[in-house]
Length: 132
Image (tube, rainbow, N blue to C red; front, side, top):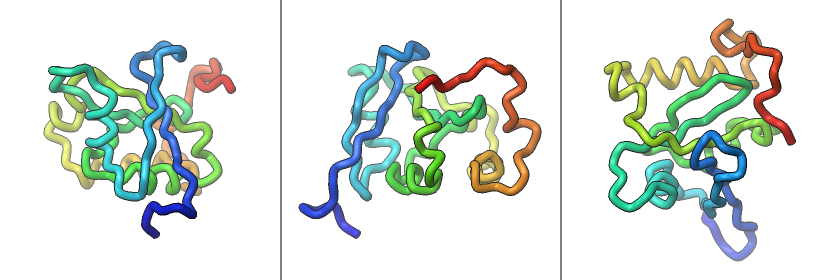
């Protein structure tokens, strides 16, 4: 489906730091890629930034070519629990040389629609990360 007059615009909240009060709202369409969101959110001249997806204490670097509307829709009803943070550093998978396929497999295993969450996805600390 193409973005058109019948579709309400969606906005992605991106936290620009770990402070809940420092965020921006980015309009997204079915064609909006992660790299588009990063470009809109980063400071002029900043080169090493990536978008991180956080859910219940588990963090994943969103791939530059991922469509943001697809990422949100993939979460289904749990998307209200997911937060996106702009990280002002190089994405971890680039530093470690980890393959994109392995990163996606790990991210899929942490998603709420999985039948079994790996121990790495379970938040050990009882403090709530997301306060509504």
